[in-house]
Image (cartoon, rainbow, N blue to C red):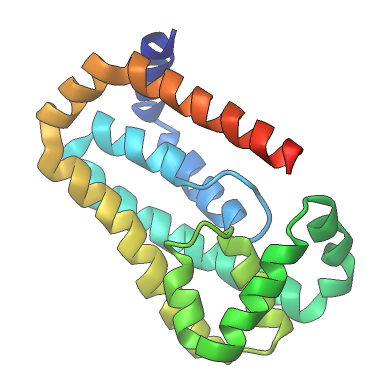
Length: 191
């Protein structure tokens, strides 16, 4: 089941318009969309290992542009998006992000690239809290770029060996993820 899905994702990653979709997903994720671009970047790097660093750059640029959009949303339209944040149960995460900004400002955006808290909350909070724009953009470039170039580097140096290992263990990995997600949902509902 997962092997067929894996092969389908790799074929999508090799599609001629995949770069456009990756860029659009990167912009959207940084400001309002829930799915991170990593889910497209990693398979695209696997499908075209020699293009991995170009794809990481494309993803970084899209993510920073989306981050600027999120910043503007936070600065000018927070009252409109606050109910959506509450509906998506991100209120607690947003409060945590505000605390991070109070303590670390620039570094909060930098580490947001690796945080389990959705990056869009950081971008919206940066605008809402009036973080200086240039430091926001610089931290976004560094933090998000580090994340996406790390993925490209791991795939590049893992190369064919990584692809072979994934093909060999994709069923186990897929079912392991399903078990983790279902267990997490059950624990979340119980507590």
